[in-house]
Length: 556
Image 1 (tube, rainbow, N blue to C red):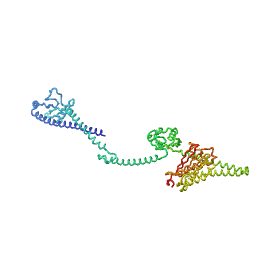
Image 2: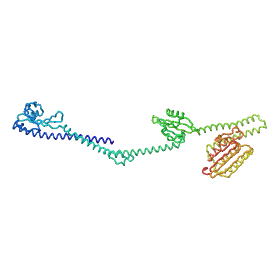
Image 3: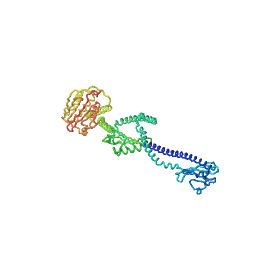
């Protein structure tokens, strides 16, 4: 804009200067021409009077250095010329001024020299004898005057250009300065030309509208970030070229990436062929999904095509952790199979014994033994069903009645019940500790202690020892069950709480039980907000520790 203002000012200055020069030249030329014509007319009138009175002799007596006098007969023959030999002059009847003088009494004309630098003015008057007296004066033409003024004009032009340049620079800067200093943040606070006020008002309105839209956009962006950053699922947004435009924290952890991956191709953080195929299929068909494994966990990978109208603008990728779901499904199948097996075995035994008795194939002396066998298997079946019901209740997290429970009293009850089993195997069963009361479910606490001690006895060695301790620290009530039994291999410790899982499957019939004891322990401890820990060495024994917080708020 500065350049446009500068050249506009300079152009106007040049045009004005040239126009002024032309106007002055024209005015000077007209002024001096009119003066000269007046002088010529005055001289001609004097000459006409002199010729009328004295004839041609009057002309011969004049000093005509500054002008030329010519006397022409009515037929155009030149009778007298003060600057030329009349014998050499041609007939003048065709001259414009002579013709006009013959016709009207007076004539006037002008003619240029060959180079247009000199102009000759002619005035003519008819005399009483029909002859014509003409006066002629040569003077510089307007072109000649202009040529004479050329160098002064050039000097003036250059001075004018220099002055115009200086003024144009200053003026253009002064014009543009307020525009360069415009505050677009607060348009109405600018001190500018009145012509800009409507524009600034419109700009202020637009600024307010843009600010409102930016605030709304920022709020929406913050809401989006708050939602996506707190998602447990991995979320990735790609543009139409497969470049990452957004990625949440869960996806960053999964792909071992960070925010620096934004703006890069998705293949830079994940090159799994299945992912690539799924992404390509979603781009083509609109949606696709597959199951992949990342860092030892199972994920459902979903890819959806994003469209704006009919245009493809990108893709949204969602990774859902289905490890627990798959594991739960596997456990459910295993549990169903195990339950079916555990229920089928005692039932088959009961049915078999009953059929033998029904068909009279059992001797009367053996009937009590068969009845005892049926009763034992039925008791085993009932225990299994009771344990399944207990686990079902714990899984459903049904509310159970709470009360103040003395853990040591529950431990004494367990010792009294299991002491007979321990003596049968010559196992020393010791109880020590203190009376500690917590708010909890009495039956669950009893089940925890009973199952831990029952396992400690079943999987112990002959002449072994089981020690049950109840004690506390500053914040927790602690139950510890240690034995000198067969121990648990390290690879099995994490699985002993699974339903129907047995470390020593070869002796499962000998030890009895349903295989659900430790599962009940785990769920019961979890229900009471406690923690359980196992330390074991194969061949040396096992120590199981259960910790309950003493803060009553945790059990309210």
